Length: 356
Ligand SMILES: Cc1ncc(COP(=O)(O)O)c(C=O)c1O
Image (cartoon, rainbow, N blue to C red; front, side, top):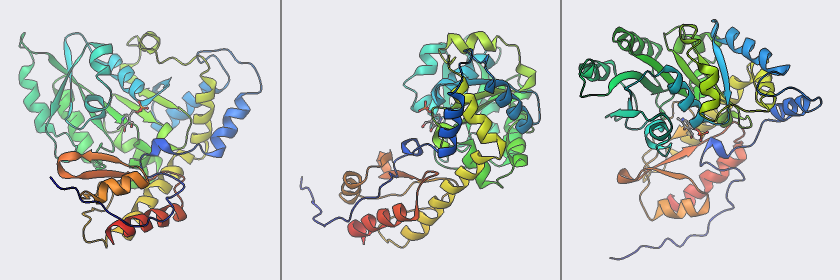
């Protein structure tokens, strides 16, 4: 086997990474909110001044009386949401790309003891027919009973469900007594891409009929701030006990809730996601000219180009980004709320040096 080595002199790498929005910094306003919450002592576990304000803010946003549970991370949010929605002997239906099935180290299986039933999905989206098909197992003692449908908005492949598609999923799932969870680790990016209004958020979540939402903040400029929103019809399913039992009850909750108070006060959460999405569009416009790169227009803040080796490895060594679908030489480039035009130009200069 021969190895091709690329010998090119590379420009300076961008200051900020295109690996993940998890790599980004914290918005100064959230640091300010944390500083404000740091002045007094406050009781722990949500009995502070900030948490009720954040809970009220979320109910206004959702336009219904949601239960709000703040958590440490996105995986923890998903586990907690599923713990609340699941009944005994039930399984979770999700796609083969879903974060819960692929990137959570088997945490749902280990912590909840639940079976995840993955369905094939070339675009990361789950379809009502797949729920219909899984529903055949209902009533059979030999099969885990499909109890929760979990979808991600946006999906792990950067695609978006339309409001009508989410409504159809909820309708089909509910018809069989199943509940619907949305992994919204990047729900802000979906909202930003689909109109950037509170109405859009409502339409794609609780008005569409979903039962629980993992509402992400960490990837969107906040510091370790995630929340689970539970629809009114599923309040009281022992949520507060499960919160602690799955190890997601923060004692100093005020530092999370204070950030959400800030985020919801003027919808900073939508503005930061809009900035991240716009940077992805600019990166696309500036890289689509490279003939050896196959790249599609992004819907949110992620791009999934196909780059062949040795160019791929050379670029990853220079400014790291993740492989996504190794079999297809597909990688992921991701922009963040704080990605600057200078970062984009520096990244494009590196791509040009290797591919141009
Ligand atoms: C779609 C999706 N869901 C959930 C998570 C979980 O986030 P965390 O790493 O905070 O557990 C991620 C993280 O990348 C994600 O991309």
